[in-house]
Amino acid sequence: MEKEEFYKKIPIWISEPKEKWNHITLLAYFCYKYEKKNGVRFSLSNWKVNPGKSKESRDFARLFSEFSPHNYSLLPLDEKLEARVKINKKIYNYINWMFDFKFRSGEKSVTGTGIFLLKAIINEFERMYISFLKKEKVKDVFNNFCTWCEKEEPEIFNLQQLNNIEDLLVLSRYIEMYSLGESDVEYRAVKKAKDMGLL
Image (tube, rainbow, N blue to C red; front, side):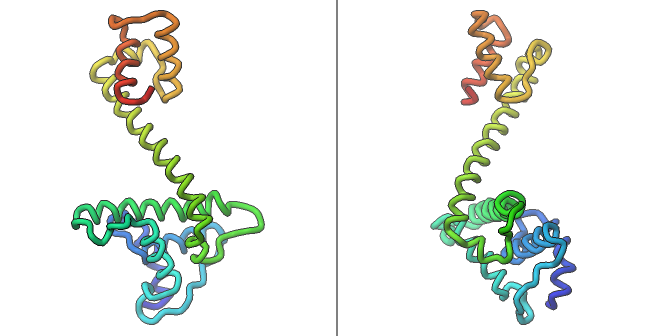
């Protein structure tokens, strides 16, 4: 594959579901972000026939290994696929973080793929990413809580605002302030939120 063909395929490859992504797709996404940020194509090192043999592609293969669980090669096929999707999403977020946050402005910028393998930067991203995952988990649990309320206690939405966790905290203080009990919909909603680990 010639470089021009690689560049033309970038939009097609990166629109594929993450289940189909590999180190070449990750490189394609890196090139997409680089061009979007800088207004010029990333100049890839030379390869023969297969872009998977380029230095940059090998960097993303190494990054995939870095983010893989230690027993990845021993996992059953279905668990390996699930792990691969998680790893690809993590690297996707890492690329976004590098371009959109870490080096969004200032004198320093992403000039190649080797920087993605620096331990100090990986450690900084890992701290941010675990925090992001925790927030996403809380958001999912809160959405499940709202679904439960819609089915079991729909009246709560007529009486109280329930758009986020902060609203739940206010509601929790409200039932304490007014000594509400089991007969009150607010009390039952807060009890369910506590059972789900939201409070």
